Every structure is written in structure tokens, then in C-alpha cells.
Image (cartoon, helix red, strand yellow):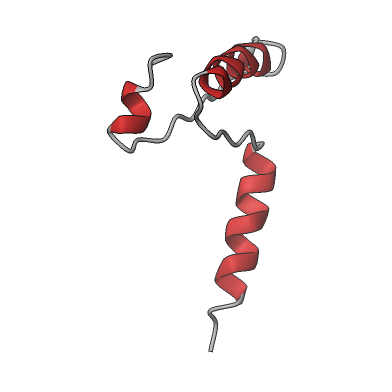
Length: 62
């Protein structure tokens, strides 16, 4: 994953888990490594993602 094979295959990575399970720590480390290898990364919470999807959907209502 750190070598970018996920990116080369044009796949997304979504980590889900309970609070205090270390997901933010894991994703921060992964993001840092991907940045070091020249990739762009986005870190977003599920709540923010849902908000953005809902706002985008509202823009397409007739």
C-alpha cells in the first residue's frame, strides 16, 4: 500500500472503526508516507464526507 499500488489501481482507502481505535494515527502515518512518495492525499471524516455528498446532491435536485 505504501508503494502506491492502491493509487496506481485508482482505488480509494476507507478506514472505519470505533472511537479511540487508532484509525487517525494509522491514516496519518499512511498519508505521510504517500506524501513522501509524491502522491496527493485527502483526510476526511465520515461526517464531513456525508455532509459534502448531501450538499452535492442538493445541487442536482430539480
